[in-house]
Image (cartoon, rainbow, N blue to C red; front, side, top):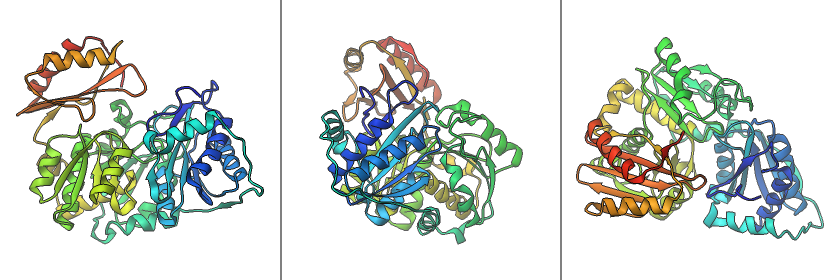
Length: 448
């Protein structure tokens, strides 16, 4: 069990005994104990190990006396939709963007409230480590539900499909769970779907379902160009994240997408609060403020974003990593909903995405640089000392700022890596600062 309990979920390899059906069964039983739920919604992705993992999860839940609403193979945000609309705790069996030999368990409380390390996951780990093996006097029942129709109607209740033009949209499903619902979504809106790798296939035969890596966007970019699409969309394995490509085949950063969606919300809800994590571009809070909104900065991670949204009443939250959170979606993230909002942004503007994006991209950025180090804390201390003259913020790792540039350096939760993000007035300034920071850190570059 060592190492599979992460900050926000449970995740590990299934081919070496790291993550097993037995563990899933124990987590299911512990989740009933944690939530005291009478019914729990369970969905799963298309990985080869998911049927066995979900069966074990359902067995663990029902043997503790709770019933299960079995949703089948669905995107993660379908589980969030059911959790929110029916006020049920939810379980999703998925390893998101990880390779085929991995699987995992994402959990949420009723109302799609997050379960992370500080909000119940560590309690579950303790329960699993010291199981009571208690059984209820009566096993819970299992009911199946096809939630796709209700899910699509829910999404379309947040946007206005009548305001969308007949745009051409190239979608790379990555052979993940977006393919389970994407055609139903497009059947209900004017834009035209140009599909790529939409068939769910847990072996991910075409490329890894991780659109954060540029090499996994190559086929989609080619499709956008050859089909003259207005927008390209790449989903990760469980479709809670989406990455976007403009009409010229250029990817949008998560910060650009956050700024565009935030501006759209603020045109409808003047003065609203928008949450963003601390590695999004400075442009995000600047644009929120210029649009009459209130920006609120948070740590990286969905449990922090969702909690701050709840505390502040925010209508929207965005992360640089491609997670977009909507108050109208129970504060849960949804790649599909982010796509629908962007389609409405494009339709209402009458402009190309390549033109609109320039309105919210005043700065240059490095992208995330991963540096392998032996001692994360010692490296962070060296950086703090080397840049002591600058403004230093320790909300999440180190954020070191000057009037015209900044960088954030954070330790990975799971690997001996430091993650470096830099922003400046132009690429030359970014490269110069990158060289200085990395010289202080030492270490070696690692793959993303």
